[in-house]
Image (tube, rainbow, N blue to C red; front, side):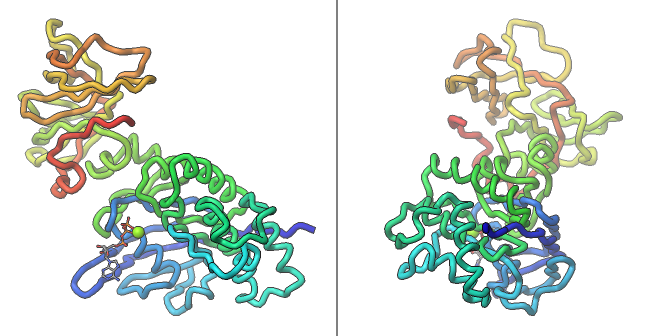
Length: 381
Ligand SMILES: Nc1ncnc2c1ncn2[C@@H]1O[C@H](COP(=O)(O)OP(=O)(O)OP(=O)(O)O)[C@@H](O)[C@H]1O
Ligand SMILES: [Mg+2]
């Protein structure tokens, strides 16, 4: 008989959740909800509070202020093992002196699951992570990827209603990461457990998540599906953290339809944006939404700006160009292989884009942290 590891995922609710260390605030009054069975990813740069948030949910660290509910019940006073949560860490925290089977059996023994049921559950968990044949090995006889699978089996073997993972693939090479990502996605679909997953890798977040919460400096900037965040970022930080963006800095001006920015001597219009007239603002367009035209053509109608091609990268399926604007800042343009313009490094060009593809966002006061000197690196992505 095969055991069933599926669970009804629990909801997790954070209300004003805060963690302070002395005078420093690691997590600053965040509000967030993971829906039952959801794959929710916490994405953000180093030090933005992701691990601290996960550890508060797990019960490894105390909450300074705010509420933490699992299935609408406060869990502040429950120790970690009473919260019915499984956890996987970045570094495979296996017991080195125990075999694979013993490692995965451990949480069942801790929870006093009868011996007669343990074997089936352990077998099912190892089968789910593709390690059914390696149960007798010791951890040091396994590769990094295999060890991480054991950690995953150990976290799911008692059918917790929530699985928390803190950069579980962070220590693995790219190829292994890619294949394990797909496996984690499959396991999530099979189990029905609520997953809260921490990463600072945007591609990983896009592959795995139902929704993503973008962290910045102890706060949440935006929560949404990958499409929400990519197509409709609400801040410059989110636009830059998820995918690439081209930014035009200036001052917002009033428009009846949408919003506009006075930048580089032009009025650049966007269909989205709510920055008050006169406030510093940034117009954001995705690089694949900008078209280049030769400078000897008439200035295109609609949004257009002059620039000079500084650099290009050939990417096979696409070409990426860095364009310098009159104020010295640079923006990126991405042309797909089937639709490449004649522009070459050194050429002067018109950049043009549609108002429906642009958004006016509040100027990012802390932008320097993520956008060093506002010059996007021309990298091969
Ligand atoms: N025990 C602690 N004492 C003091 N400060 C701490 C402690 N733990 C974390 N911090 C601080 O809290 C902030 C958030 O840390 P956290 O580990 O949650 O970041 P993170 O988003 O997980 O980063 P990373 O991607 O590097 O793992 C950081 O500024 C960190 O220095
Ligand atoms: Mg961390």
